[in-house]
Image (tube, rainbow, N blue to C red; front, side, top):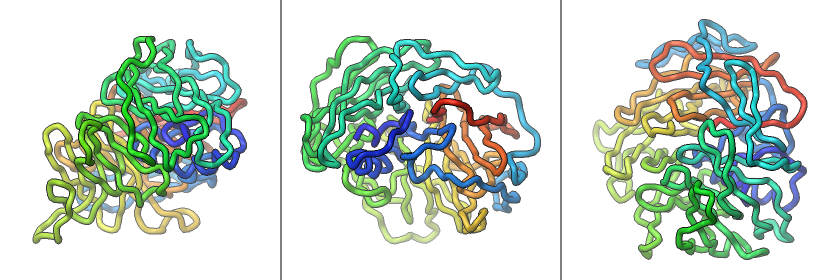
Length: 418
């Protein structure tokens, strides 16, 4: 079940329990904001969104009001590129997690995490990562809670991880350096049982906050400035109703459908038109601008991000400071082998005006993952082309990306992007 919230390290052959939880994982990982992970090489048990067939770059599309993309060749991103930021490092999961520097190609072990043959899972939290061991005893039923596993906090760029406690599920907290740890009785059916959640910080002490009893059948997606964002553990992605829930109140304060991304202060979701306050959707008013909806939870400010004609947003991620929203925008079936064509686009949350990330107009099967893996505003994505795999980094306001060719090597490391 913990796989639902965390990007995972080394994969093993899934048991019946893990197969059931993989469905739950797809629901929760879409909004955790950091649960996009990259595999080198491919593994059994990877999420369905991680394509296995090499993709093909496409000619740059003509999109009104969007800056032109740098053309991408069939075997990778071409055109002008910039040098990598030497301070940017990516965590890589595996039996011995490391920091990897795309600028130098060097790696450094992360202290505080014992060697674990089952690997580690990473979840992006404010100020760093919640890291959980993948080891857990399988339960007899597919939706039953297995053994709890240790959870650590790893600060952005930190040399060592600090243990937070143990849990069945992990989710980001609104507080920097903290995570929500949810526990179930061994063998409890998580679809019907009520988990006990506790916020834990990075002080090295055991969990200190009072436990919160969750509504039966719901799991925490993340903590926000206005309560806990919950999702049902039994509904597939795209159909779930996300609840913004205050533990002290008897009912949810707001319901969201089609959630793409969340942060402690913001929620992004898809809808046909801008909703009224309170979550109800009116008929399309004259001149309505429809697209991606952004809600600032602290101020109540609502922003609409209009999408190019004929496109749809598949997934998204807020930058660590909440200033930008990155979107995977898909177009008609014009990609390689009939796949959707896609590109990455980024919008400031204050204006909602999208800008194309240069060089990312490719068939959708080429994109492995994307995210914001550091405190700064550096969006990083990984692509798999016919003859190579590439990491690309881009900062809003710059004209070109930084690109690095990566090659599958020994071991089973996963670059964690967000």
